[in-house]
Image 1 (cartoon, rainbow, N blue to C red):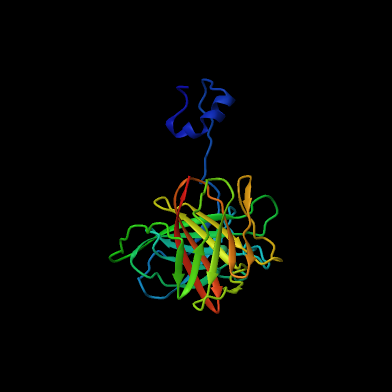
Image 2 (cartoon, rainbow, N blue to C red):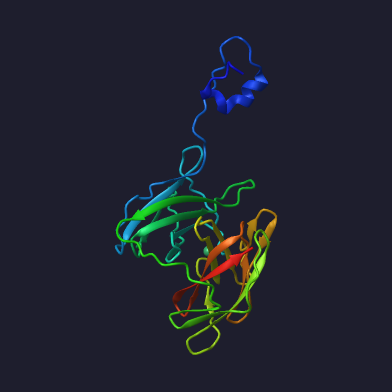
Length: 279
Ligand SMILES: [Cu+2]
């Protein structure tokens, strides 16, 4: 193997298969990996200041991705999800692409800190690729809030709306699990969910520390494209009774996860975070 130079280590196998004679090693040029890339997302933000953000996804060919899945369900277009690294703040938007594949949306980072940007994209492609994620780190300058991750709580309120988890969850990685949540208005009546970004409720999961990401949905009965898939496992949330959400949980690895339930009730977008232990 003395004829294999360090620069050619990546093609060692190919060289080995091709044989290793006394003549000069074959000249093989390895280009950059051809993958989907996030383009145009600005690198600088100021805390508390709305900023217009424009981005697109470039295909492996280099051309902008212009065709995204459409339909009534949530698995369409792109989901733009931004979470602060301590899991204390989340931004969730579904901007629509223009004909050139460009997305524009206004973003306000609530505080200084380190944020993980997740673009969960649903391209309109033939073939097995369903969706994929692109990531970016953004550091918003200033003093970042530093709170410990809150412990599990079975009742969370937002704007007087109450999210009550039934029972203590027993969650396992790579398996479909369900959480039942009763959502009530400030007057105690069951919440009526207005479809928001194609779903009655969104369940966004980030793992503490590593910020691994997963996302499931609760949809109305006739909505298609609501099932989340992880390997061979799949999960679809449902509304079992008025105001009661059966939320699918399907997480790739064990650990401590922060779940953000989001839904729209009475014209308000509500966010109910809770901390989950996954074994
Ligand atoms: Cu969603």
